[in-house]
Length: 587
Image 1 (cartoon, rainbow, N blue to C red):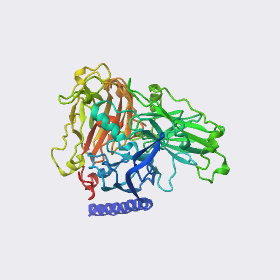
Image 2: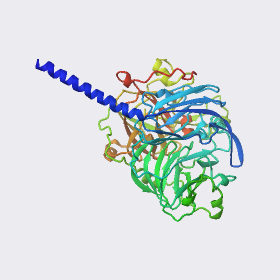
Image 3: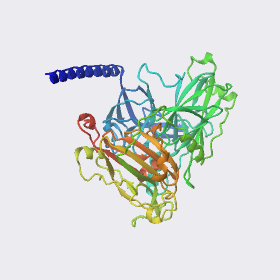
Image 4: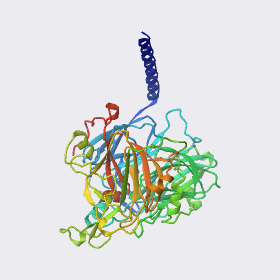
């Protein structure tokens, strides 16, 4: 009898415990809200640099609308495509737990929304706080189709730093005095590099250093003595950027919607896709100060946009504070010329290294210590020989008679065009992709040295790499010097990962494992792999689906610098991807 009683007691306790747990969850979700938005994607006249272009925008806004939610909230965004191009929206950095259908990269998790079509993205943001963003994930539409996604703590919960007086999203963008789709199409035709942009922008405005731009320069208000939060997002297509504010220090408190151990710096570097939250204090004599951003250019001899975008940090006197922020546009600016900051040299890799080495999680974190799958991925450029049927006009790559390409582990990624990878995986449709993406380079070579020409031409393919649900994964991302070494911002969809180490030269497991930070490494969704170097990331594959891993320089993803990590379902419903929504676009 004793044993029976014992079991009953346990059953009783566990049911009480279960009820308590459910109660806690109900309380937590009681505050959780559902935010519904409509995005209309359409051509809108946008005037920049003296000229008006019919740019693709969301709701007629450039940049697009800022979405603000709390940790735990659900977003429901109906996207209607009234433009003449296919479009998808990617919620950059959102974990999309089991909701891969809402992730957005075209032909990876969905077919694109065709002109005239619509699709509703539904997902919950759980356990993430800080700054993310959203952008088109279809050709080069994200040149103008992007906006901020701000995730505040749950209601009633504080920031882990003193509450700022004001918060301002700072979206760094890249502007072509042309149709960006035409720019990428021309490059595809010629096989050469696409034309570089004509301006960088802050919140859609190039700033005072460009023609026809100074009357609309972005103004960021601050009061003397107050501390504000700047949510800096690099939404540029192809360029890592330095960002600084004249005479002011920036205290970094978060990046990619994860908090960091605060550190102070004069300058930030963000690769495309990355976000950085910084505190700035109005501790200087009241006067206008420029915020400025310009290129960090790590690729030798490659053309780049060497212009500088500016916004104005404007001190407000307290009696202005109840007016709109725009009333004094121009008035104050004419009086005093803003103070210009100095920016690092375009190729200042030392500053970038010192900056990235300052990133730490606020406390000890649970980094996977034992690894189930250890992967080694080379990332870099390549060149294709001119196909027999192509004339010289179509082969204007870096060496006469070649075309630019790019690859990971010598595979140049080719998107499917009639069904998405996730649909093919979920429905078991054969012939769309293969699962033989190599876990290490097919040939070992001196990755950052003088690479034999025989290794410059990758093999095209739609290859994914399978991961078991729950497996602990390590990926070494190794830059190559093929064509040119470069700092590559590598973004993994569906996951945050710990950056446990980075360095220069070829990764050497014997020597470099000793440098791993397994105590408090930063948690990110996009890692800037050092030029001529490597980075090591770790994560647990706890989110089933088809997740794109790619370089966030759009020119490189078009050339094939990508692969897909296929995370298999685990056991039961909660470890399996949800069924596809009924309105998922058809190809």
